[in-house]
Amino acid sequence: MGGGRKPSERPSKICVACGLPFSWRKKWERDWEGVKYCSDRCRMSAKGAGAGANA
Image (tube, rainbow, N blue to C red; front, side):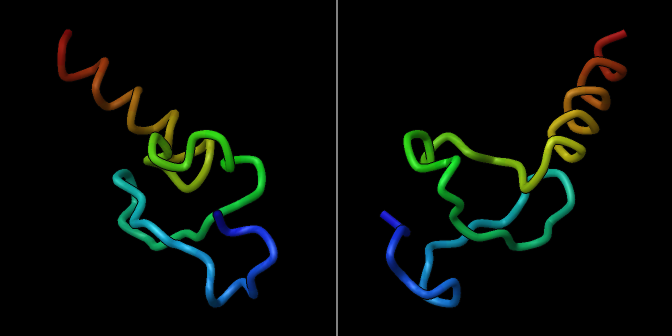
């Protein structure tokens, strides 16, 4: 999908936790459709916030 393209031409998304844009990375190649967060930090903070709301 994004491999072989210049970084400026790769697909991008908006992180649901921090709202910043992030672009395709090789490690997300198999599951780009399922990627929601730009980093582990955002993913963990979103899960932590969700768990606190249920308590």
